[in-house]
Image 1: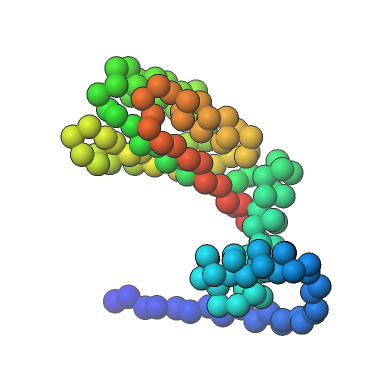
Image 2: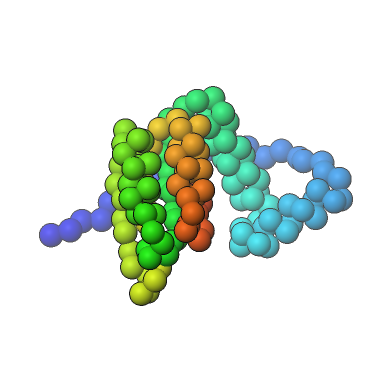
Length: 143
């Protein structure tokens, strides 16, 4: 039998005034619209949280992330080279998921954890391989 538990955290909201130049206010409103935030306050919360995560990357804290690559699996030696690079960074890699998109293309999602500079180095090496059609590293703070 499955039970669903809900945890609520009570945080007191503090209200304050913000003064912005018109062009910055327009930029904030575009963020609200593009990201579908219910209001400006939520957009500001998001931007502050995002900044905190990026600070942790720069401070050398551990981060978690995913490297996503799309490639042509017919490209000679690509899978061997990719595997060799991944073995060089085995301590950072948590798991790898391989998906066949069609007859020619594969997608790999590589779950990673470590220092931001290490994950960036690994992602850059993989994405630079000849035959990689698209690649991206997404990182988030572990705590």
